[in-house]
Image (cartoon, rainbow, N blue to C red; front, side, top):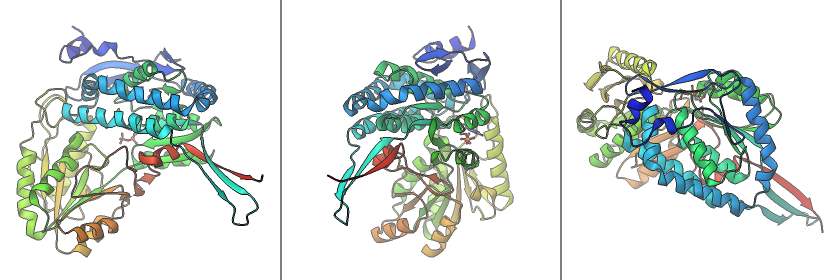
Length: 492
Ligand code: ADP
């Protein structure tokens, strides 16, 4: 049995049925050079399969094809676009189990997380199917009374979409669905760690009736040069990126040359604040999901736990008990609650952060060391008395580590929570409604979870302040990111 056969034997579908070539103009192509990239199973460290490695010429070919498909797609009636998007939703739900297994296989996340991701990802198609027929403009009389002001939203043009490996389906659909609803065509470049989900979804879009050339998918080991070439092609008018702040900064510079519109979902360093008056059980449930959804590999993951003195002991003990009880194992094993990290580098980085926190004075309540087995495993870990000078306070952890600090006053915790260059999301737990809303408004972040550990919702505007990004995805805002506003001064 080869690798792909033996892994397929553990799943409900044949992994060899997932395409691995570039998807350009409705055709599957091996790419100009014929080079291939390994796709690794983080649960074992073994190579699952290989995918095509697009050259710069392939990337530009994808832009050309998207540009050619643009006018017909923009002119497609909103109702037709809407029904195609709705069909994408239906097909994703129909194939939820297969897609969830595929996500678990290439990303490592536990199956319940992967199923949740497929549902969340599919919802972007349902939501934007509804938005596609509600792209309303405005008409009003100019203050002078001389003319009418007509405002309408037009598709911005070819969009380059770049996505990370932590949500292989949802980060793609969160961009593709609004792009298509707005009437744009696109080139998606998924992370090379998790390309298979993007290819399986491309197959599904075709079945749903998305015309050839409207969505193109390329994988490449030369992300920098290939993206730079696309962002310097005059046919590209939009970049939507989800990934690290570090790469986001590079892409903003690249996009500057042609003044390309950018939507950026970048890193986070979420504070998770628990006041003495919080309901302990609600706070723990919130902490478990805000920290452990996706094994902590989420930009929305709780990074810095600030717990008020009176509840700190009870909160830390309970969180350590719950985190320590999670079953760690292969993502696609049905018993697993916490899968592996994405790769060895992630394990080493997190081990370094934990060791540094301990050196700065933190105590490890549970976990703390990588697991000695094949694959890339770091166990759920709770650190108490983490100091402000520890690296873990400043870096996005991206793993199952809860770093707890205590505080005394509201002003003190607000200042600590906001003392980060990131501003994606904050979590606040309290039974006092006025304090909850007051502190939520004082959080310097684009989103707040108030007595909730999950906020992501296709119907809500997702995005951050400061160096966490630009623009919003989801809600009505999401479709506007793919539109130009056209103003017509009209007299009649
Ligand atoms: P992460 O830390 O989640 O891997 P990255 O920002 O490194 O975040 O990667 C997010 C996406 O950006 C991936 O698709 C990756 O291939 C891509 N990427 C990385 N470096 C560059 C670059 N210089 N130009 C364009 N895309 C890049």
